[in-house]
Every structure is written in C-alpha cells, then in structure tokens.
Length: 425
Image (cartoon, rainbow, N blue to C red; front, side):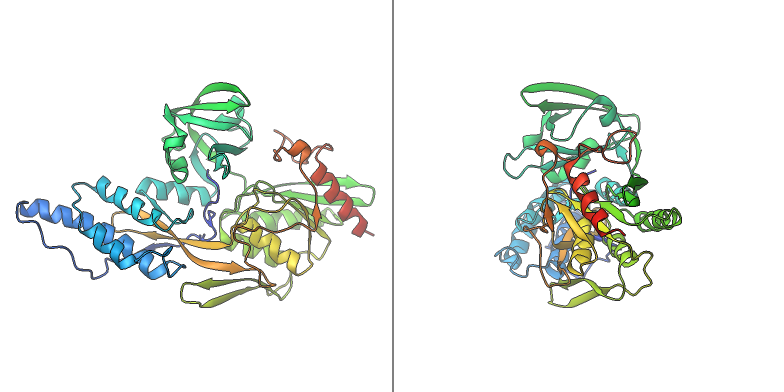
C-alpha cells in the first residue's frame, strides 16, 4: 500500500478518484527518422517518442495548474522530443523526469505493473507485505504509518513510526517515494528484505510477499453509561467501502445503538466516489463537496437522501487522515452533522485521475481542486478538529491485533466517546 493513494488512492476514481481511461494516440507530429538508423530502428524510436509525447499531451490537456509550475510546457515538449530513445525504459525515465518538473507529489508516471498494483489497491487487495509507508516531510525518511493485521509485516513485528532504511539492499534515500509500492509489491511467494530503524536500533526482516486483502471496515458495539454506541473503523476507502458501510449501519441500527464513532485515523484515502456515497448515508439533501478543474469548471456533489441514520456522530481524525477521509470528514463537519475529535488532518485537497498510455503504462494526473461545503480548499492545510486531542504519548494510532474497539488508554477515542455520550438521551 502507499500513502495518498488514489485519490488515491484511493486516491480517485482518483488517490481520490481513479478513472481508468484508455486514450487513443492523438494526432501528433513525430520527428523525422534519423537517416543513419534502419527503418525498423527508426520506427522503434518513434514509438518511444510517441509514448513520451502522449504523456505530454495528457498533462497539457488535463493538468489543473495551467502555469505548469511556471514551466514553458511547449518548450518542455520540444526538449524531450529532440532526444533519442533506444528503449521503452528510456521513454519511461523521460516521462518520469518530465512530470517531475511539475513538482506535484501526486502527478506521476506508472509502469503497467504499477497500474495493476494501483487498481488492486483500490479494489481492496494487493500483493505485498502489508505495510503502508509515507515520506516524512521534515526528515525525508520513509516512515511506516500502518501495517495490515496478520500480514507478513505485522507478524514480523514491524510497527508504525519505524523507519524503512533500505529495500533489498537499495537505500530508500535513492528511491523516489512514489516508487515505494514498486519495490515492496511483487509476485506471491517472492521474498523481499527490508531494513528497519527503530530509535537507534537497526533490524533486517526477510519477508515473503502474499495476497493481502484489506477489510474496508470493521465495527463493533461499545457499551456506555448512556447505552450502546456503534464503533466503525475505516483503514482505507476502496470500491467495496460503501457497500460495507451500508451493511455495518444496517446491522448496528438493528442492534439499536444510540450513536456512532467513525474512526478515520491513519486512513490515507482511496476511492473518492466511496467517500461521497458514504457521506450520503449520513446526510440529507445538501452539497457535500465541489471540484474545480483546469478550465475552472465547477462540479458539485450532493446528498439526495434518504439517510440511513440520523443518530449523533463523532469522527476521529489525525495527521494521517487524508484525501477521501478529508472529503467525508469536511462534508459532515461543515453541515454540523458530526463533530471531529483528534488532530488536524493531512491536507490533500486535490483530485487525481489515472490516464492510460498506449503501451499499458499511465499517468496519475492532478486534474482538479476540491472545496468543502463552506468553500474551503484544505490542500496543505488540513481540517481542524472541533476538539483537539493528541494521541497517546504522541504516537500514531495503531489498531490492536485481534481487537476492534480501541483500548481505554486511547485518549482520542475516550474523548470521542465522552463527546458522543453527552448528546445521547
């Protein structure tokens, strides 16, 4: 898994909405073959240049920042088409470098395998070791933010806040953070060696990759002095999340819970549509979110009812709640449908789509900014909770293996319950 994801993931649909769209080759001029090349070699080089140019065209047509990070995008095209490419890998490297000029952490090139991994992630499953990593913006180190319960990483004892030093001997300082999944994910049964630093101690783990199925949510009833409360934890937004939420709410309503705690801590996002569909389960006919694309065109997303429950709701958030998590939390907070408890969120207020290139590779491109119902763009700012509560000893929240409900020592959950029970009759 990876942070941000399709929206993510999913992040997204991008790392908010991932739209897989196969594009036909646009009618672009291809440089005249170099005379010293054979006809076959010239055609091959032109196919590589065509791939580079197709990627350029996608950014030209779709990218939200029309200044292209103050770059002369036509000049960039001329530069990259004036070069010679002897292999598909050369073209891949060129496209990667070209989009990096945008200095957008979410716009990136993906190989065909990378696209498959991305689609698997937003579908709720992937092949890997069950660890989510994120680049620490201050230290520039890869930090573990979550391990999937019962995964190889979890079984080995890898923990949130661990630092990934190297993968298969390659220092992570030499790897683009957006390539993290390509290093960690691989064939079922294949092995990967990960070096971890925890404090001043270094450890090396040899892990075997396996199929990881990510449960879109877990839920359980919490007994309180005011009666039953439904606790729901969502680790990520996948294509299965909305259906799972509907099932959970239907079951919890049958158990006659009086209110809900929705835990979005450490949720990096995922499928944008899932966050919208879930928001509609809690709200009536209101505007949930708005997006504005590269042409300034605004699109509003509305709830249209009926809701599945009108009972009080508290949402737990933290600094790793991002993207689709923020869409859901902001919509419910702005309409006073829920109170947010925890720490400010990550701050990802942009939407990506996945565009396929002719050879099966592709680009994840930032195509829009989104705004909360009150007109706020939270990109690089985040959402402020109604009630600020730090996590235990400043450590990120980590679900306990085999347990759904957080422990009593969890200050954010404990405070959230207090806030909720005050609203219960």
